Image 1 (cartoon, rainbow, N blue to C red):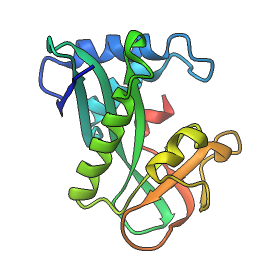
Image 2 (image 1 turned 30 degrees about the vertical axis):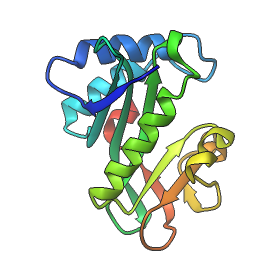
Image 3 (image 1 turned 90 degrees about the vertical axis):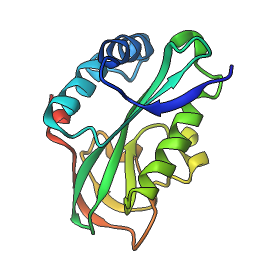
Length: 167
């Protein structure tokens, strides 16, 4: 499936919410808060980068969000990748990978020192993410916490997410 990727534009909000809700609806690790999370990030001004994937007929079939984080012993700016969503009928076709690669490239180009995420290490390691770090988030999430350093040393200490993640 040929797609185009572009930044979110005014008017995309409804499609992004529907897409995100559908993408996470049947996932065992999802809590149903992913769609509202993107809306809270946007409302708080913490949606640093929001990209959409468009099908040939310009329907939004994928979305990725990046938001700022702070790190106790780390040099800013660092960001979190979350969530990345693909419409269920198009999952496992490379759209998510394309969004991640484009998002990482854009964030690096914008001067990010690195990216953190919580996710499947087997999936995200292909993009260079590693669990080899000295960061902590929570006992429950730490086994899935991964980072990708663009510049500088690996940070250490407590990772604090954007307030929208507090729900």
